[in-house]
Amino acid sequence: MIFLKDQKGQSAAEFVLVAPFLFLFFFCVLQMAYMGFVSFAVQRAALAIARKASLGSTENSTAFKSQLALSLLPIASLNQKTLLTILETNYQITQSTDQKQVSAKVRYPMPIWIPLVRNIFGETLTPSANYNDSPEGKAIKMVFSLLKKPEPDLSFHGLSLPVRWIVFEETTFNESYQSK
Image 1 (cartoon, helix red, strand yellow):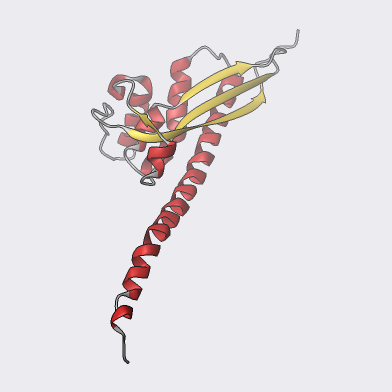
Image 2 (cartoon, one colour):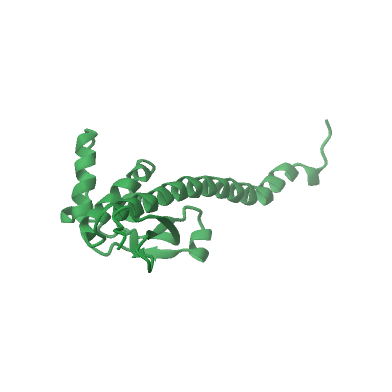
């Protein structure tokens, strides 16, 4: 086969031009799959919080925060850094004006793993507390010990993650509603 001097590096040059787009596409597909998995888990956590609130008082924030952390714990099997996102998740419980329904709104910091995209669309999540002695931290450590896994350090010194906040809201009937 006879090659001209100009055609020798054509394949390499084409690959160099196309490769960034292929890698970006590959990372986007992985991020979307991750977002789908995590979105389902956060939605189920919102339903678990609404269900717990419908069974009794909505005043016990420690129980709700622990329930939220335990509901989101399967996400932690993907990456140890996601424990920070689980512990930084917020919730809000509201009752309808007629007290017949309870809603739980869960606000979760979704990690963005794609380089460059996280700098554009993400905001930095830094830990707001040392969770080693918090109720939700103790609940997570208890689950780790039951699974015979080493207990994680929940202080998160110097850790920051690029995230995008997502919100899910679930509503259920108030089972503790008393008709007057």
